[in-house]
Length: 207
Image (cartoon, rainbow, N blue to C red; front, side):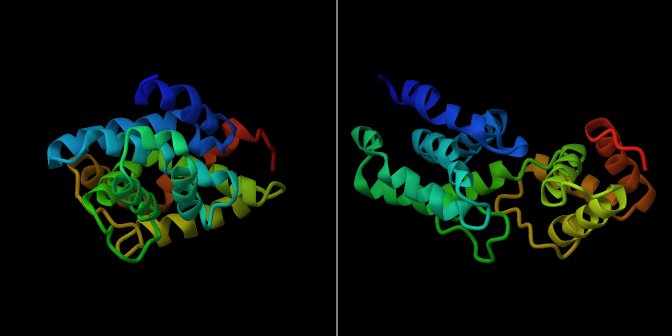
């Protein structure tokens, strides 16, 4: 069995049980972008591939420590040691730990910067809809105003000017999309319209 066969048959299916914003399609998008960035920056593509494949597996436990848990899952996977040295395993673990958007310190290696940048999939509409989806998970009985208030606060805290999200490699795609997203966040009618769009399409609640 090759490394790719192992990842595709054993690791990626584990994303099927995670929340809507972190299904297998998310993992695959992070893999694709990680491979692209690894090639651009002269990094080992196999390591970048594995880091991306494991980076969110810890969400099966909780959101707050998922980056730590994901690194632990990688280190506990003895199958990987047929392809990687102990030093490479530790580097991949560190990169996974460093990928979280709310991390205050820069990634320790280029691999952490790669997976962090790849994970910042700043599709403006998708970001807003996923934020509403998570708000609905937090407040399952919340009406639109409740979900919108929480979503707006989170979007401002994370993505607005001065927010905690950092782009460590400043990829052209992310820089351009972050500007679009910030423009939407600062435009109350447009932001509210996109949030209402998600609410009406997903909850079907008349208020």
